[in-house]
Length: 294
Image (tube, rainbow, N blue to C red):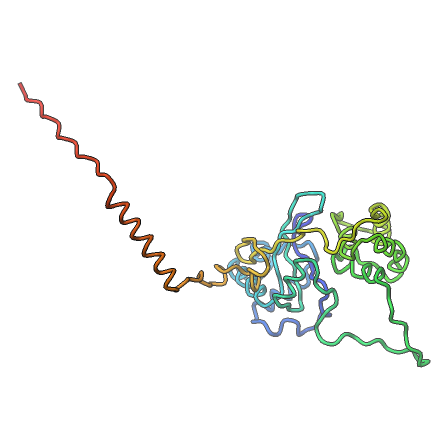
């Protein structure tokens, strides 16, 4: 396991596990992806640690992680521990469901959809007596049900969601956003949570915002900073397509071939030549007279 707060994190909204999850990948990458998928949250995912457990060397594992990032199965980021603390930790989010850059960018901003988008959503089976099953759920219930996607340690049962719904509804009535409620419930968690329902009740009660509090349309910012999967250079998600920086992608920096740019280069070269040409030269020192012997 990695140090507390570090290591693997499961991305939200993944499709159920099947035997064909990684069939689109090469054999090595599929083997490593299946291994990563079964690692518990918090497990170390650096290439050196994985190479000790897998039948591949460090360089092979590092290359596989880069390819899995490009395939949309993982992203590396720095994540702030809490709004009250300045400590940042490095985490690797893994998804057995391949995601595109737009999804990962939204997730790293904190506003990715929580439901899986792989195929059609399951349809509810109507009751035997033919009556339509009630499908309406309150926003308070929905935000409580989504907390487990943000951190599996805080997964709440249906009974716990129903019991905590009045508290979450009061948060919303006081102007808190769903993102603010999720943050209050998953921020700076202990390593082990024996009773998520009781823990959530205590947090919702102790951290209840005051009446008339201004709404928070966005969650705490910044919460996450994306990193290149290969070299860990930080940057905005839009600058890291496939989770990789330009250098690790092998993309050369762009050049400006316009006539204006070429003229600017020529002028600069001429200026440097003029400086060298007009620089005053230091006069040569006269030779020292030789002392005669005698």
